Length: 155
Image 1 (cartoon, rainbow, N blue to C red):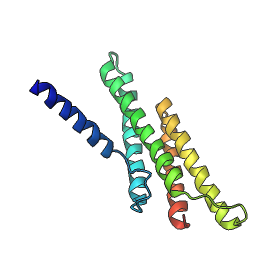
Image 2 (image 1 turned 90 degrees about the horizontal axis):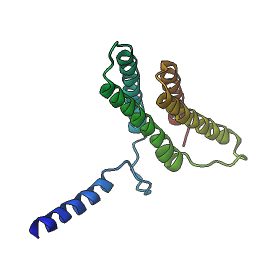
Image 3 (image 1 turned 180 degrees about the vertical axis):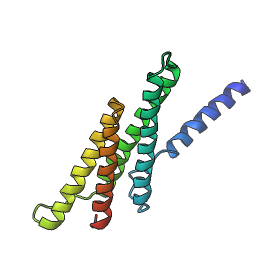
Image 4 (image 1 turned 30 degrees about the vertical axis):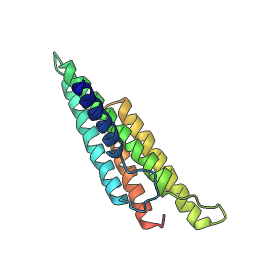
């Protein structure tokens, strides 16, 4: 009986701690690490790039290690999804504020940031779908353009 109670307490404890360990929430706490999120995106890009190279290298072998291939493919997809989550749940949901069309100059900056975030999400999706390094190049340059637009202009 004590083992069952202990197991239940441990499971309950882990389930509550898992929720607290997630990404930055949508609660308006005022604590934001915009530059940290951009750095995380760049780290995810490097991981995806390495996974693509490893997939191509392993696939070219006469007898590829399919376990390693599956692990690299899975890893590549997870990191692409993490980019999409930062783009969507962090920047689009929390940081980019809507601007009225009547505010011409500010609206132009607003739509530019939206366009770049959308492109980042699409290139991350394309990275999930293939090992084409051109998608990495496009994703990295789009992140750089977003970084410049975001940190140069007010948000």
